Image (cartoon, rainbow, N blue to C red; front, side, top):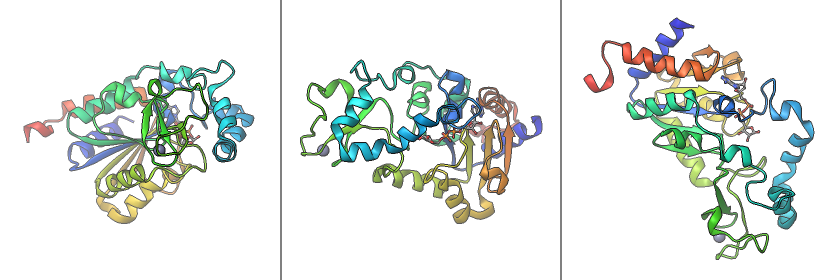
Length: 267
Ligand code: APR
Ligand code: ZN
């Protein structure tokens, strides 16, 4: 493991444009369960997974029923996401933020909706599946803070005449075009991609590393940090997997970079 951490430090320091791609495994050490890990939400509750797969259809067919389900029995915003909204960043988020502040990681593309990368101080974060902290108009894409939208009348209307929903992207819901384009641009221009805490099975996000590889070939270094191998590992789409806890590995990579004789700002 030490050799791979040293290798990752060298790859990152030598990169011109490194980006991070992250998934739910980033936040398990902040107390937010992942989906497909051994204790994941979908692993342990197939009914919840089935309900999640139908949520976007419910919104399209019956937005009022969607809002009632999202608000939960207490009928208060965040009933659905209470534990996520109050979570704190862990050492893994702080490691990514440190690499971002060093000017090494230029962008973080996350599937997580918890906003913990921003809370940890990462500079440029693309929330690929939206966030629990915002609402979004399904027609014009305008985003709103929760406190700026009254839920006396549900579903809340947008001034464009569209309907407002949670900003999170549900299964089968298209990724907002602005987000999709930004993420693809980043994936196509990076020369190092460090992928942390994702099972890499949900598309189109899981397609980003493959698209980047297709475009950059061996010019691109793909590093995985994950508790278990993923299809990217097994297909050898990634160059190497540092297997273990993100909260331990990321700080070690930062420390290894600090120990390297030449760091970026000394160049
Ligand atoms: N350190 C390293 N790896 C971890 C840790 C940890 N502390 N905790 C979990 N993992 C790994 C798990 O072993 C698993 O391989 O992170 C991965 C998390 O995978 P998923 O639970 O599938 O999460 P993710 O890939 O983000 O899911 C993608 O699916 O349900 C949808 O929209 C949801 O954004 C989510 C998407
Ligand atoms: Zn609108």
